[in-house]
Length: 629
Image 1 (spheres, rainbow, N blue to C red):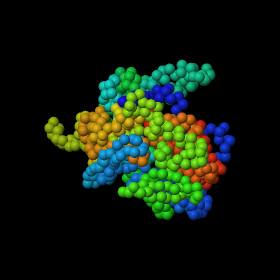
Image 2: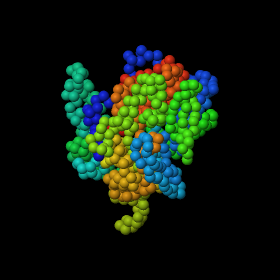
Image 3: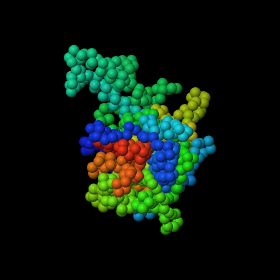
Image 4: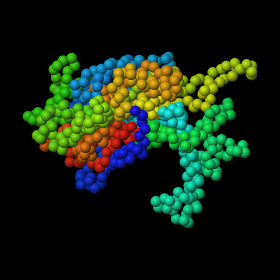
């Protein structure tokens, strides 16, 4: 299934979809609200115990703040996996990866185990693949603040390079990949020329047309803007080569060259015609303009050496401050003991049918909400358990996960609360995208040695980072943003969503890798053939995780239920002592910043339960916020 849904089509089909959450002053003015994350009172919780279920970024943030703010609380984290981080996963040579055989949350069994086998040529940096989060927007201030505070070095992540490629099946480009700068700047040039030529009539036909007295001046200003915006000639023409009389009249080189200037004189690439650009529907078939959206605008960052530096730093701080992280401790039941007024949390013991029990005054759940259906005791989900509204909200999420809209045919994709997403990682020689090295050859005519590059690369700008796009189910290819002088590099050779991810996740690992290789060959046979040491992950199959992010757009009455869950709950009308955290309960679903925000909100409610977390009147649609539709 190709990605052929343009943003216009998506918004026509989903007119209420928003990329961002929105507050409503009229609603919130009726509440007493937090004005930001509350500071915890030192020693206030002495003698109390907090058990945090799940050592993802939200769970680790919760633990760190409880300890760093000297709350007096004993802090215990229970993590089902043998590592911290949750969906924040970095793979290195020797690591193993085992998915479940399917995406069922309960009762599934382990599937095939993959071993990461990246090679490391002498002098290369250590290869790694960020199989989960891969970038940090510069607007994510709290995450960047923690990394600075913890001494985690960051470097620039290249989201977009004009040398990246877009490939579309069929159409005027016959399936051949096109350099993004040609698609982008040719389109901009032609549109700018049309605006220049029709500037006066466009201004006259605005919803609030300009005054006639101002029209000549504003027309001139709009035309001047278009000359700069589209790199037009002084008289408003978009040209990419010398004019008829041989004089260069402001020819635009923004779309690149067929022969690069330097030792050679340079030849500007032929312009792509506007009709070919429109017929290609490149903006609808690929996500070429995703880097223009707010979260993906420069500058973006990544931790030096891998995204898992984030959770390692948090985990080290938690341990240094006295917290305890238990790995390989999957929780199987959360119950309430009325006599002691405490939670009893049962954990499966590795290699045994017995359970270990932890007791908590406060419980923070960092697991995906649908898992609570079987993990919370029946009593907690009954009338004498959690608040009625909280339990209704849980049931609405369960409905979206376990009883989605019926598929037309058995085993057909049907969207659920937890999103399907898959990735494929590869290792390859960097010359496949950074270009062949300059070589020295003997020129018999000149009777001397000359340096040269392959004729096929005369107009090719090497790719250093960024993303190439395709309407093939692999959707995108990420190039590494570090180690540019290394011999080899690791690429994300597929990152897709929804039905594409669902179908790929159903396939055996070998089939997924072959699908990803075939998609890569669309960018060049040699490129696809040169990919090696592949590893594939379907997050909907990952044990104890079972999805990439929360999709609230599939929950009935989602806004009301979201607002209830963010406030936390008590047991049988008691004080607030149970909280759900994670990006699933934030205005930034699918992002680590959202996970951090949810933890800070939960701690604010615990500290000052009389102050509500501000209510939202609309929730972000992850198809816009994460997938970049």
